[in-house]
Length: 348
Image 1 (cartoon, rainbow, N blue to C red):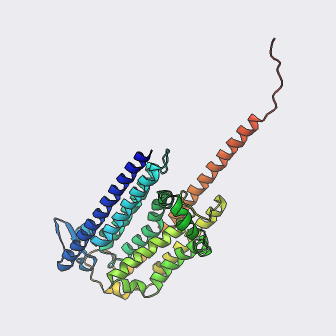
Image 2 (cartoon, rainbow, N blue to C red):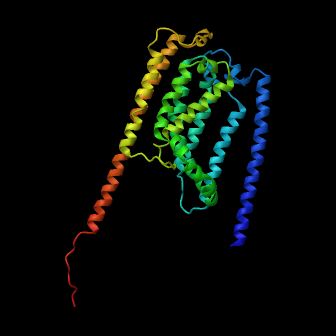
Image 3 (spheres, rainbow, N blue to C red):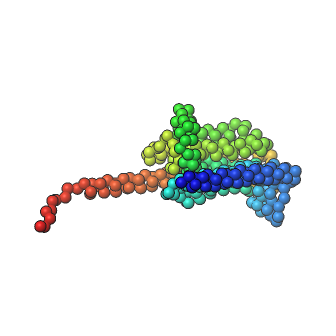
């Protein structure tokens, strides 16, 4: 037994050391890549063009749909988070005989991260400072589509298991059980963030300031993603929470999607003038004009938001019906096993 434990510890140390060296190597490569992109104007082959967000060329069709505005360091950090998830799953699974997280949940988690990468660094991101429609698509993905996929992978549950009993008892549980943490993770806080973050971003000068500042631009991405994760946390099962919502409460909770997206849609669709002067001043040789672009952005937020809210409500209603059906089957089975049976004497 002692030999087996020593072998396991040695293997674990070797793996962690390899991961650490990989982290250092990846960080160095990403820094070098950032410096190379900053000193040039971008490059590519054929229609594909790779550059930084600040060096995106004017939109021309079809080159615009093959332009990638990348930032090596953020890309590396996101990829590192995906590697951390896979490593955490491996560590957690090592102490359990049964599968903790299905392959479909893992695929959902990785798909969510891939969606974030494409949204933040793909062609959508390249021209989100030119077309408000593209920025609205980014907002919609980061706050309503990517978070549920990421949470389906149950990253918090895997982290708790992989952390070990002693660390959970001494460090993690005291934080999770603290009153401040419980108050911050309340579902009403999630609804507030889900509504307040986009309203604050678009109504205040924050959005226009982000058009001139790449760091602020990426901070905006992170805030939207965080608000989405907070909102969807009590709804998506598989992650520990002090706020386990019943199915009727979940339906009411998800109804918040409808007025929030409707309000945001009306803010951009109804005005007869361009709200952001900076977007109106950007030269466009292709695509809709500033006012039409703004109205399309509002329509997307309204229609897509209402559609997603309806889909989410239907899924929760189906889960509720399935749950009630399972409970009914268990009760029927219990009643059947407890039924009175007449005594039949055995033949001598």
